[in-house]
Length: 184
View 1 (cartoon, one colour):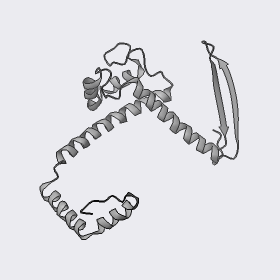
View 2 (cartoon, one colour):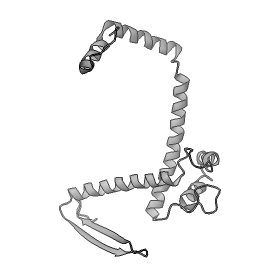
View 3 (cartoon, one colour):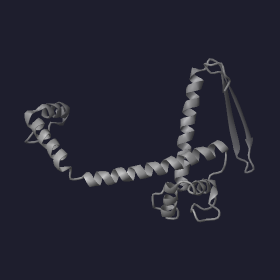
View 4 (cartoon, helix red, strand yellow):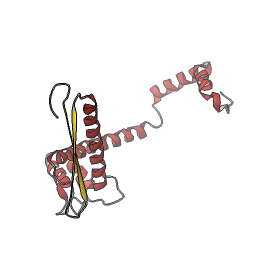
């Protein structure tokens, strides 16, 4: 493999043979010794990436918890404005702002990214909220469908009614008996 390879149909076999070759094993041993004694060139970059990843994971934990809370309570998420300093910021940003009184990490995040506007990653926008709501809804639907598939008995009721704008709103009610004998 020192000279390269252009046999793409057999590349998997060729790479496997190369990884087992004496030259490759010797080179990997030298590389690993160098990394352990001197450190890798990109160690600082990797550390920064890990730090950034940790930061955004912590932000997401708080955002998802807030989305789940508002969803469980059946409350509206947003209002006419998506900035933290606005008076009409909606329940989502109000909840996060309230939690920031007790959470220094969240407080720092809201101060730094709360009013940065479009085009900047902050996980506070209505688009992110909508995406998480969709993901939670899909997960909930999948759990319910799996329970229904396991159920011996189930019933389906369908009804619809027009709303104030004369758009028909459909309701689907599914009741089922789970394996413990409980009606859901």
